[in-house]
Image (cartoon, rainbow, N blue to C red; front, side, top):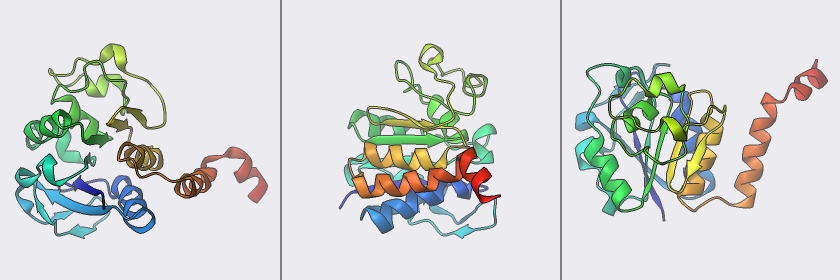
Length: 196
């Protein structure tokens, strides 16, 4: 059974984690494991309290097939945890690594986006990091981008982030893809007009 680590921080964006974790676990049999800095309980922006399964420092790629870094307010502060060692270790072992919203800034700080096609909240947002060298590979798109085993997305793209992370893990099925397509129909203007 594939195993996905999901890194959560205090004030994490719950809407960014939920589709990935639910689809992975309920539809595709992926074991999801939550981690936080120090393994301490965290509370999402929406008030969801999570007691993580493990600490960030215990994330080793030998035990996981992928790592998802969920966005949250902490990534834009000087209190952001150093995820560099974990991300680079996952990258060296060719494991899936994904970041959504401010999680892309956390990944940008590790330096792994050089030469990798990616996206995020904006190019200026990622350029806040002095270690970001991916300007020429940045795509300004409203959906997640996957380049090999690296997945990035803006905070407005939790469904495509989930889909691309699961594809990077190698577990997507035609049925799961169909479910994602149905969820995406909500964003179709024609569907809104038809319902009015």
